[in-house]
Each structure stands twice: as C-alpha cells, then as structure tokens.
Length: 176
Image (cartoon, rainbow, N blue to C red):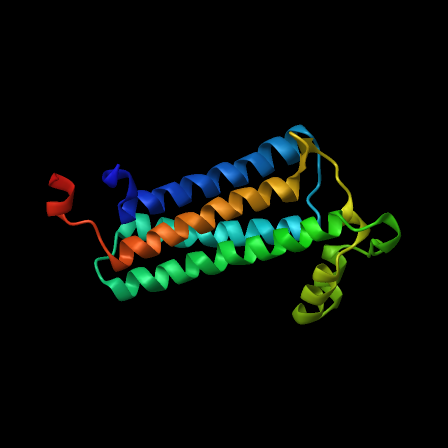
C-alpha cells in the first residue's frame, strides 16, 4: 500500500484523473451526446488541465528538492482549487429557484472579444441561464455535481501528496 502512495505514483494518479476527466467531457459529453460546455464548465476544465500539467511535470521529473515539490504542488493545487470553486458556484446556480436564475448573456466568445479579462471573469461568475440548465444526469447528479465529487477526491489526493512531501517514504519504511 505504501508503494501506491509514493510522491510519483500520486502524481501519476492526478495525471490519469485529468486525462479521464477531460476525455469524458470531450469525447462522451461533447462528441457523443452533443452537449456544448457552458462558460463555467470551460473554466472547470481549465483548472483540471492546469492541475494535470503540474502533476505531469512532477511525475516526469520527480524532483528531489522539497521546495520544487512544494512549488509544483501549489501550482497543481491552484488548478484543482479553481475547478472546485467554479464547480461549487455552478452547483449553486443550478439549485437556484427558476425565478432567480440569471438571464442568458451573449456568450463567452463575445465577452472574450469585447470585454477586458476581469470583466469577463465577473460576467462568467455572475452566471447565466445557460449555466443553470441541467442537460444530463447520472445517478441523479448533474455534470457540475459529478465534477465537484471528482474535484473533492483530487483535493484529498493533494492532501496526501503534501503529506508525502513533508514525510517522504524512505527505503527503510518500505522494507517493513
């Protein structure tokens, strides 16, 4: 069991989860079901990609320095923390009463072309009717709810990784 929780193996787990999550979103939800991602979904994917990128760097280079490991961990944590925060907001929007759901805006492409980036972020997080709609469920959970569960698991994995950075497995502890 200790071999499974080494620093490198945990990073590989994060990379695999990012690949699985992105593949599911792209190939199943978008290509197979024909669902278009709303702005909040896109922002969740960006965070997952950031996490996966930092985890991939960590897994490939397996740094020995605790400082480098912590910096890579912080980058990865920032990515999944972002995704988690966006997913929480998304779930909240989906559970608003119908009369309180914000109206649909012109869309993310338009905002990116015409507004400064801080204004785009403000508009996206204000939400829209597009983000509040539930187009697909699995075991009664919407896509943002399922995403939030995945992101929560990945946050727990980040806690274990931090523990491994602070208290690495030594060859002696593996031999026991």
